[in-house]
Image (cartoon, rainbow, N blue to C red):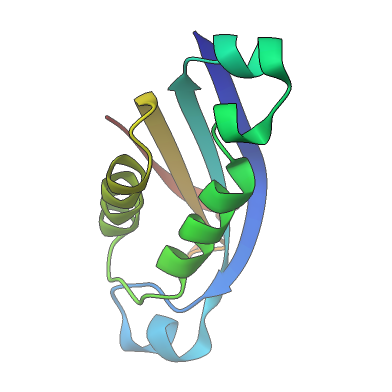
Length: 116
């Protein structure tokens, strides 16, 4: 078994409960951790035998372009797509962080992490 981690993906998107968030937008950071069998790829050195993390990134990018009210919805949609697109995934964890959330105080980020 192996663990593929894509860390620090940055997106500017229009997610949020408040109307202003969906108009002005905000910066979001994402981390993905995916458990998969890396044995064959480790031996053959062929991308066809591995989880293509460029495709994972592109999938996440597409989902970040779809407006959501909640970070939980973003995580859930990404996990749904990952399991639909890649049958080699044993476990996946997605962490979505909204930077400088409008909560009436000095807050660096708020995050939601979901695993499946």
